Amino acid sequence: MGRRVLHHLDPARYDRVSLLTRSEISLPPHLSGGVTVRQIRSALDRPERYASEIDPSTAILHLAARVGRAKVADFMRDNVEGTRIIVRAAEEGGAAGLVNVSSIAAKFPATAFYPYADSKRQAEEIVAKCRRPWITVRPTIVLGEGSPIWDKFRQLARGPLPVVPGTPSTRIQPIHVDDLATVLLDILDRGGFEEAVCELGGAEPVTMEEFMKRAHHRLTGRRGVAIPVPLALGMPLLRAFERISPVPLPVTEGQLSSFLYDGVVEPNPLQERYADRLRGVDEILEDLTS
Image 1 (cartoon, rainbow, N blue to C red):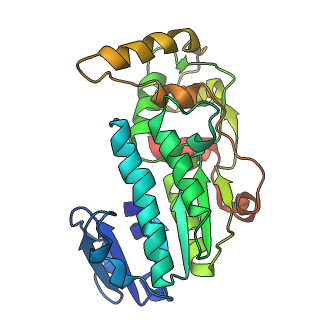
Image 2: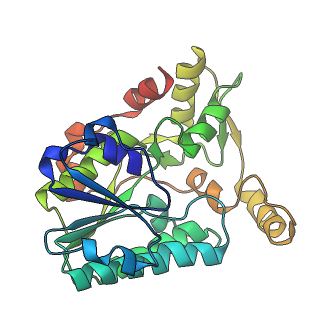
């Protein structure tokens, strides 16, 4: 996500850009001249290294997060405490505003066994108490070339018949990574700090079954009946294995939640404002499979 934001960033709109990153990254060619781009190699829990970059002219885009497989303590440290620290830095520096990027998983009904979702929900609560202007953007499933979730979908869809884990009627509303990046930058440019949690998804909600059928057709040129693979009955067993397994399992209970719970957007001003700029499922799949 951070790299796509940089790809779309217009250097003419900023005097300076400060990147908080764990390791130095290669900048897009269009950022090589003009705007001053400073890379600060640090973690969120070292505010002494980046606090001087925050002042009343600064808008903060908070993309940093622990994702994937990790210990509960790691999610709490990076996503919860890390957010608490950047919020404090924004307040002390008098930042113009803070854009916090969360996840649709934060509203899933059962997050006790999904530490990532639980940590993002707690981070949202911290941001909501920020004493500077703020907005939390809660995107749906974000799809882009090379993204882990798209890689999983592609594996399930490219076989002889598309496979649908979980409930085929589960609804999703995927958003293209570039659409999300441009919306985040527009929020920064116009100072759109709504002081609310705003969900953002693509132009079209579909069932998981329909999505997998369309992905299968785009990848193989064939149409087929989707094969559902029930998950709900196996979740307690997977949970037990997670607790006793000496090695990490290929998938966790939490990571399967997107196949069980609806991940669609509730109507809100942010979604309505950008509705005509967001791609639908077929446009997203066309880009990812071309």
